[in-house]
Length: 188
Image 1 (tube, rainbow, N blue to C red):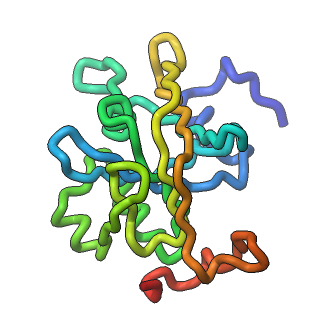
Image 2 (tube, rainbow, N blue to C red; image 1 turned 120 degrees about the vertical axis):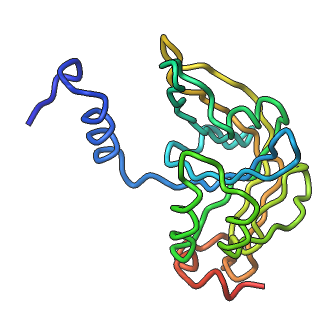
């Protein structure tokens, strides 16, 4: 089967590319809002860019406002305003909370509390990490690229400045992937 991209609708393009580019890692990102509250959002447009320096990419699609203009989402605004974030690699047990934080409106503190999410202080950035995530990458915004005409996405290159992993993920000095599937709620 072949698909000329120009003949596809936006939803057909989305479905086709996300079906073809797999597996995609899921990033669960905390950032700090202007008022000091914490924003949490999941992203599947996330990956490694470079190991030296240690850079990851996070692409944040813009959303249409009431007038039809593309506006930045909270995570992009927060990174541009505050300059840092924490990127988590959620376990399978986090799936309901990841899904709940993926709505078009950012979760309130009451919703965060209802999801049982607690925060721990980060070591190198001001934004806290989600306490019971097995992997947390503390990062600072390195570069912002507006993508498309009109602008459809914000591509954020983030330099990782500190890495946290749960002790039980380490085997022979390496992070071992299978424990991501274990019950994250059992973590201290």
